[in-house]
Structures are given as C-alpha cells and as structure tokens.
Image 1 (cartoon, rainbow, N blue to C red):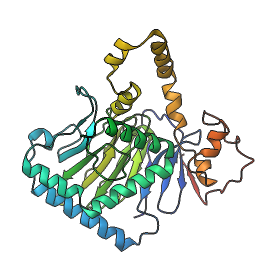
Image 2 (spheres, rainbow, N blue to C red; image 1 turned 180 degrees about the vertical axis):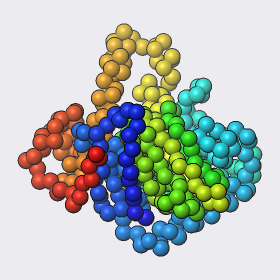
Image 3 (cartoon, rainbow, N blue to C red; image 1 turned 30 degrees about the horizontal axis):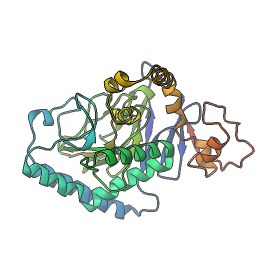
Image 4 (cartoon, helix red, strand yellow; image 1 turned 60 degrees about the vertical axis):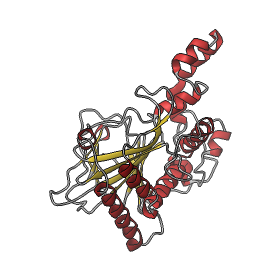
Length: 345
C-alpha cells in the first residue's frame, strides 16, 4: 500500500510543497506556511495488510452489486468527470435549489440498491476512516463541517445523512466499471476544505489509477483501498486511465459550499438575507466576505502542531496565532520532529 509521488512541471505552480512522512503509510502535503493542504492517508494505521485488503474487496463487491442492480441515464454514465456510472446521495445546496435538499435517486430498484450499498459494513468502515483522517489532519474544518450538518439537520429533519457520525453531507459513488477522469475541478464543493476519496479495484496501481494534481505538479500512485483528502474545488485534478481489462470504483465524501452560506445567512438564501438585512448587517457581511480567505486559511492544521501532539491546534489558537505566522512562533513548546521530510525540487 506504499505511496509513490512523482513531480512534473505544470505551467503554473502556486504552492511550495513539502511531503512529510506520518506515520509510515500516510503523507501530508504542506504549503510554505506549514499548513497541511492535503493528506495521502493510505490505510488505517495498525491494520494488517490482509485485513484492509479484505475490507477493500468487500467494498468493491458491494459497489459492483449496486451497479448491477441499478439503471443509469446517459448523463449519469457520461458526465464531465468521465465515462463511468456514478450516483450521488446525501444532501446539498446550490444549482437552483431553493433550500438544502436530498439528492434524488429515482426508481425503487435504484433506491434499494443504494440503501444496501450505504449499509454495507466495508463501505461504512471506509467512511469512518475518511472521517478519522479529516478530524486528525484538519480538525477545525472537520468541526465546522460537523456543526454545520447538525444545525441544518435540526432545522430540516427530512435531510438524510449517509452514515452515522460523518462530517460530510454528500457521497458520490463512482461505479465504473472503469472510473477515471479528465482534468477538472469540483466548484460546488467547499473551497477552503477537503473532499475524501477512496478508490477500489481490482487494478494494477503501477500501470494506472494515479491521481494527478496539476496545479501542484504531482502524480500520485493511488493503490486500491487507499484514501486521499485534498481541496478538489481549488486544485485541478485527474485520474490516469487503468488497463482495458481492469475495474476501478471510488467513494468520495464532501460538502457543498452552499450549505455553509445557507447557515451563515441564518438558514436562508443570499437574496432573502439581503432583502431583510439592516445597513449594519450588510456592512458586517461585506467585512466577512473580504476576510473569508483569511478565515479559511486559519482552519488548516499546521504540520508543526501535529508534530508536537497538538493536532487540534488549541495551543496556537489560545496564543492568537491562527493567522499567517512564521514557523518560530511556538518555539518555546517542544516539537517532535518527523523522521523524514521529502522536499519538492
């Protein structure tokens, strides 16, 4: 389940990266201000190879069965992300919706097949691992996702969560049989945070299925059963095709950015908020809009905080150091240095 990361030279590279090894099967991508911007999560730490391979095999079998029991429109089989069947469940807001709504699955057979997939133990274990990685390496964003879901679901109990204790509002299953994508971004996803992507086989990860992060100049070997979290709304990404006789499936969890705007507006659309807002509320909103990028950056975990065991970033927050600062701001606290750092040339 080892990672191989190769670099190339895109037309524009927007970040200086370090690849930090943690804890063995996990690699963090860190920007020039020590913020963890993506995680190559591998498999659960402590899982024996055969154990997680069995989980991945069970999840693959469940995805194949769901595909066999389902029907798909041409649009669902040939979308902008590639020529493979896909299904999205959970809920979101945007694209003409008047309020947060469940993603619709049409037809009783399709609904039953999807419910069976969501209840599969292996799929649930993968969801749990995705959430654990999100919480560990991007805790402040995880908390905001979780709290936003809880608040919206209290207002709208008809909204269906896909899994218990998940921070994500939506799940897309790429049901193949040969799921690979051309270069694209996912603009509906929350821009200042991550989606979680786990792929499933069977395919040879040395010959295909690699994840390409174009803006960063990275080609990442992505073995079946492994998980990656990255900001899919900000980074152009694609998947290298697998061989003709192979299959590839994927489970992706995310939340649409519109859900956070809905909550911030007091559970109403922008238009309704602005129609009712006072001059003071409008001014406050504009100030928040201007600083949104900065507030988003503050929610990314620092690698140095992970190394010192403060994965929640509580020491930095208490010291008022969430804003962009150099790497010496907490030198008085002991730091456990990683055993290896691989720097991008």
